Length: 266
Ligand code: FES
Image (cartoon, rainbow, N blue to C red; front, top):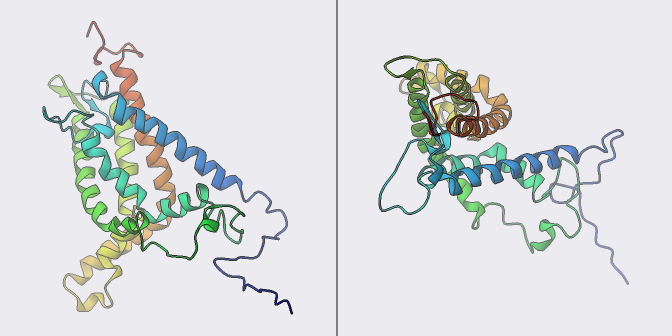
């Protein structure tokens, strides 16, 4: 007698999506995959291969990829590599990005209530292990990357304020404004982080019973207010970081004719 195997619909085996008019479910994961790929290509070129051009700095501007500027004689590779692992680790372990890249790159699953495609990565697994093995277990370090990212963010604010000071006086250039917009978006991204929300108040059962409870409650409420926009901040700040780096490189290369770059004649 043949016994037909019945699998219950659920997280691992959702029923096919049948909602009318939702045949466009693939648009978002594909768009995210394209966006991620473009950013990874651009940032890798800038961080790894373009250090020697010195075009990461132009007058009072410093590319966020190279901040804080750590240059050591004993380090043979790009100085940005000494820094980039912090924001990279912060973003790679971010809850929002995890959902995004699991869906867009691994199609695991590609969207809510959509089956994992036959032959996809999910079918290579013999059993579900969650994030308990390398490399995905590293995602549990997110809170530690958050601590480091807060330090880098403070340095980026210092760089941004410094970008409004040039040749002994106040200076306002397009680059200063771009850097300001970028650091505001990065602040929104960092302060809407789920791990930060947990850190400031998520683990507290009773605010009025805990140390500095009123203050913690106020901070927790502020973080909770921007937390729903975490995905928006994630995307806008990703684009702004690359855009500021590109702008500074163009200024440094003399493309706009400003005499604050590293090109000849300045
Ligand atoms: Fe996205 Fe923390 S959850 S940065």
